[in-house]
Amino acid sequence: MVAADNLKPTPKQAHFDLITYLKERQKLCEAALEKAVPIRYPEKIYEAMRYSLLAGGKRLRPILCLASCEMTGGTIEMAMPTACALEMIHTMSLIHDDLPAMDNDDFRRGKLTNHRVYGEDVAILAGDGLLAYAFEYIASHTKNVPPERVLQVVAILGRAVGAAGLVGGQVVDLESEGKSNISVETLNFIHNHKTGALLKACIVCGGVLAGASEQQLQRLSRYAQNIGLAFQIVDDILDVTATQEQLGKTAGKDQKAKKVTYPSLWGIEESRKQAQQLVESACAELEPFGEAAQPLVALAHFITNRTY
Amino acid sequence: MVAADNLKPTPKQAHFDLITYLKERQKLCEAALEKAVPIRYPEKIYEAMRYSLLAGGKRLRPILCLASCEMTGGTIEMAMPTACALEMIHTMSLIHDDLPAMDNDDFRRGKLTNHRVYGEDVAILAGDGLLAYAFEYIASHTKNVPPERVLQVVAILGRAVGAAGLVGGQVVDLESEGKSNISVETLNFIHNHKTGALLKACIVCGGVLAGASEQQLQRLSRYAQNIGLAFQIVDDILDVTATQEQLGKTAGKDQKAKKVTYPSLWGIEESRKQAQQLVESACAELEPFGEAAQPLVALAHFITNRTY
Image 1 (cartoon, rainbow over the protein chains, first blue to last red):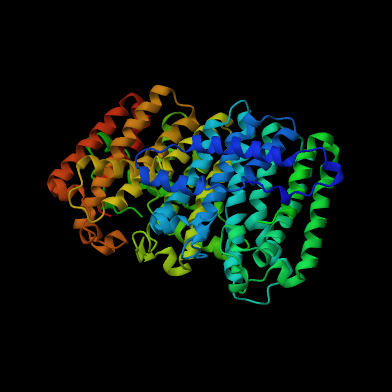
Image 2: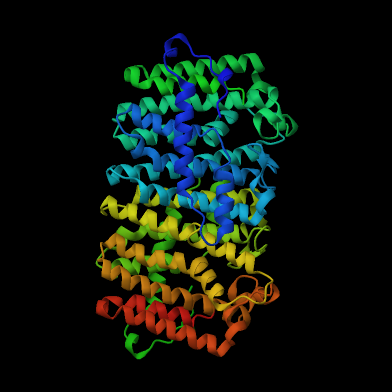
């Protein structure tokens, strides 16, 4: 769901209706995800996977992937299996993140966390199942894309989730907890890997599927890196300023865990300024794509203006 | 390590030196695995992944994959990245299986389990990292194989690990624990999925990489199904008859957990007979491959004769 007051279009994008765009794309993604994971025997594991996968997130990752594929000349159909896989992987990381041995969270997206409903054992397996299925789904459901491109997507995604990406960021995050002398370099490493790597994969994979040139992929990659960091800065700001109801998850938990965050390093105002600058750099990368870049430009602004 | 007294070659395989074959292949696999996961920053996660991956298992899964690829006309080089990935996936399943929320095991392969050394949080992430890396590794390291075959391998493997395979078997296993009225159908489901699916993937993927025909793949698949179940029956028998020292993991834990096992349903002798019959059916599938089938035939017999 997108609240209208989150969107403050700049004059440049005034003619692009992001609200309608997001609603349409969210609907497409919901339908594709719903279809991707039917319930079979043993029902419990499929229910657990669906419980978190279909819990109504913003679907930012799949939407970014579709947008990037279209901007570089591909179609929604070419990117949809990868878009679904990205949401499966994102969901798996949330399920495992929330486990008692990790962040020990009770709420996520306004609902009880997976292990609070299905138990820790099933939650671990639901995450594993989603991760494995993501790769299966890309490999078996991507149509009208040359197989070498699909393989490249598998490699990029695998890297984005593993120790060189998300998992590596998680480990440094865990090691940094409770330490008050974390440098901005370490904080950047954590976020570049924990959040940034998968966001970047969304955007780059969209381009790869469409057959984008090396130069185009590099632009996509820099766009992604900038909005990834902006996204995390805004997340840190919201942890301080938003309520639990707005976030759908426990608010203020960074402060409680004594985590070093961008607001704790820079203050709220400077953090907002930095996020804004990153978004502008991101959008500058997309200038050569002209009109076709409108959705990704609007999405970049949406990320910093969101209130949840 | 292979103990000579495990091998009782039938007259047919008398001229095939399985001990030397296994030693050579284990050495190849160890070297490839060692190389596949170098230590980088953040070191802790790579160390945790390597701790379990390089803990000296029998490497049966990668060896089966290489053997099947060679039997159907491929080379070791074509299958090695997939072989390594299979061991990564197997290791991930062991790490997550041993977690306190699952089997809560302290020992594995004669060493402390991953979470007992690195903590539960890192153990969960090490498993996730190995699973993601397995797919990345296949996609980025497989050489001289047409990309559509590699994609097929990704799809088969993903399915073998997810809710339609290993994870699904795990869930039914967890649900069955403590119940004494489990049917042989449920027990077969558990093992066909928990152990069988990945073993089958090893053997079928070897054939796919080599470009085996549909008919050949079906033979490989039936061979795999039979030895998969035989493997599990022998595992159940060993849990009753072998010592902890021989197994390198906690012995007698099935009985302690009141798990229904093949020996508990059929008794030890009948279980042995069933396993032997399954191995014979498995080997019959390989007759059309002639001499080239020697390693897989010998491996099938090795599985039922093993004492650890």
